Image 1 (tube, one colour):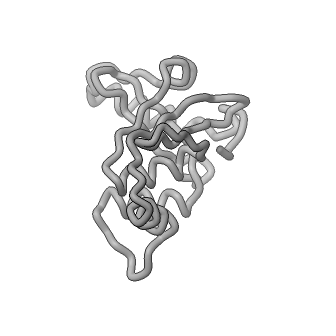
Image 2 (image 1 turned 120 degrees about the horizontal axis):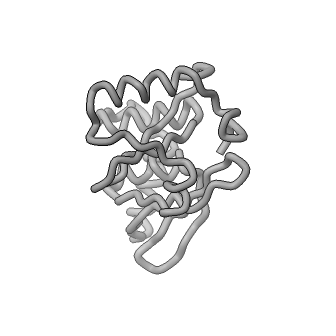
Image 3 (image 1 turned 90 degrees about the vertical axis):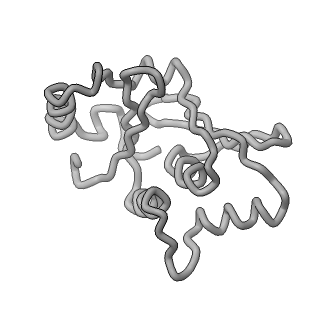
Length: 145
C-alpha cells in the first residue's frame, strides 16, 4: 500500500462504492486476526475490550463511520443502552469484527470519500489497484485518524 501503510476497504452493501481508510499497523494486525479467526496467545486490546463489554453485560449494536473532517475519519460505537462513544474507525472496525456488529458509513462520508467500482469487474478492480498505488494518505489530508 502507499507509504507501506495499511488500508482497510469497507464495501458498500447493495452499492458499488468502497471506503478506503488508512490505519496503523497495530490495528491492521488486529483486523486481520479477526478476519482470519486467529486468536493470539494473549488477548489483544480489542479482544480485551470485547471481554470487558461481555463481563459488564453491554452489547455493541452498531459501529458508525460518521464523519470525515480535514482528512480524518471519525466513528462511533453504539450500544444497546443508547450510549454512543467516539472511536477511531480502525479500533471500531476491529471491535465490530470480534463482536459480529454491523458497520455503517454515513452517506456524507461515502459521498465524500467513497470510490465507485461498478459491478466489481476485473478491469475496474485493476484500475482501483492502480489508483491505490498512486495515492498517499496525504491526498486525503492526513495519514492519521
